[in-house]
Length: 138
Image (cartoon, helix red, strand yellow):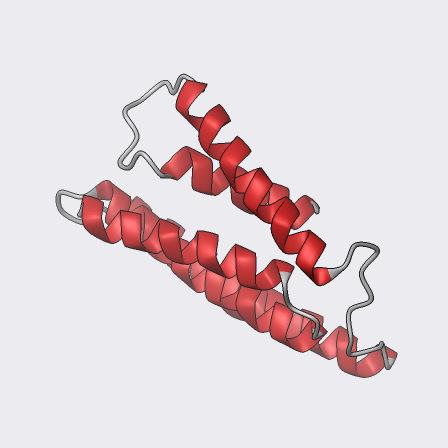
């Protein structure tokens, strides 16, 4: 199962980098919806031995909200407000990608030093989480 978790976390990091280079708002919403669906799988994969109802409910609820409900609300708001479909960033797309790569390196540096109260199912869990949060804030 650790391989599947690692593949999922690499997918999240790669979609974060794609999100930093995206210029269309609708594409950004689709990417975030894909990330939400992938994050819905994480509790199921991390639990490992046998599926428990709490892991199933957490994964399904997370995937439903992040993968379908929130993106549909964002798309509806985009349609009704006649917002610009192009993203006009303060920082250029190439600069955003370079800052993203730097943030990825920092997330690995910080993630290796953070103590966890339980053993992590993957060594990529904390760095991928930090990078995803920092990408969203950026």
